[in-house]
Length: 476
Image 1 (cartoon, rainbow, N blue to C red):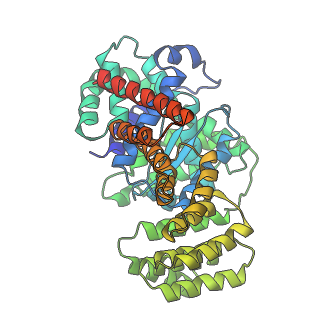
Image 2 (cartoon, helix red, strand yellow):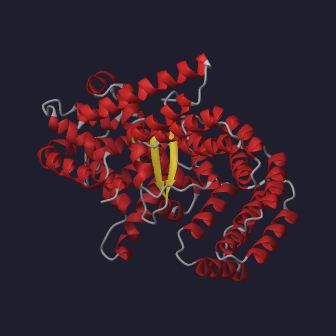
Image 3 (cartoon, rainbow, N blue to C red):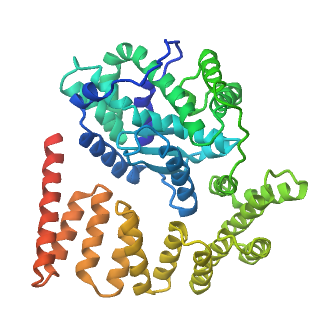
């Protein structure tokens, strides 16, 4: 069983088809939940989940797409009641329609959900719902309601949320039967609370609050086309006619606002269309038919998708021609020189890729372009340029394991063995392989020479990793 499926089963406890009374006030979630799971423990659970998720889930590593989801999610977070909570949004390559949240502010979004959303407000409505699960501490509150479940039962519930493979499935199976009946009423309230506060969050963030009931209703109506099986989102977040009506009534309390989709929403959907297509020829045909029949919502996104589909089909020349057309139409838009650079990079023409990424960066010096440019520097063996840029990126996002891995490659290419092993260790720490991290730290120490600062910093990190290994052993 895939890791996110296990988490999905756990989060099923947050939904029920039955009706429950409305919650009109913000809950007092602090004391009861904190007595069971402290904020530090929430953070640890989320980090453990992500380390395991990186091993078992098909997490998308396309900065353009992940950057869009992170920016969209952060726009909502900035208007939430818990702005101090750090959130990390990530995309999973999975064509099922689903999203989920775990303690620590980690929110996963399936590519299938991005495709299913007819508007950016609909996509934002799901993110707002998941953000609320985190800010209202629904998992800690769920566990706090089970104070009578001591030791193994609570541990099993947590294990089911963060473990992959059969271990997580078994842990959940042992726990679920004994607690589910006692949780249903409480978890119905969680779902309705997430609807209510999610709608408010949508409105405060400038999105259409009616998008949430509209999306739920569309999923419910289309359930019959799934061969008798509902979309995964409806299994984890059961929706009833009464719940849709209530959310629609709540949305009606806000002024009507027609919100246009951003360009990036359309570009993201085009990218996902190519990503989720098993045969790139089908994607080429799809976008060409859209352009021929003028059946697109946004023409430039259709051309953008066509260029990506041609690239995926290794049709480099027509892909570049399509990108050139977009550059000629929009010379001030960084997305299109970045698109052309991406096409060159896929063909191994890294010098040209660097040129166009630099052009894109001059138009907009954003993290997405900088990351792509760093990758091209590495491939072109321009290690000093890569190191400089990667260090800048890591000052913004120090918990990104791939950036540490890239920096390790740059340091190794420059002959800096201490830094290469240290950065590799950070990569293993963030991906949950403490044993490998310890080995890399020991190798770094061997190359520290007589530099006391290096020795002290590495020895401190070694002690931290050893403590982590002991903690993991105690938990087994």
